[in-house]
Image (cartoon, rainbow, N blue to C red; front, top):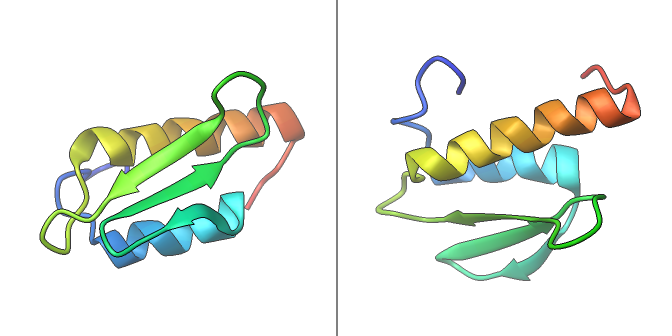
Length: 76
């Protein structure tokens, strides 16, 4: 995902988010919202765009995972 953020399938990004962030806050066919452990507006929102995801949303997920790993000492 880091090397090629353009062609990430929606179902694959959902699997990654499920693994790192758990169950979705909103679960529809077009949008999924995942809660993160930070204060404020801690969420990751991903959108199904013709079975693919939007590049900026993939980058948001990558950044959130990296922050989660640093903040909580997680290495997965």
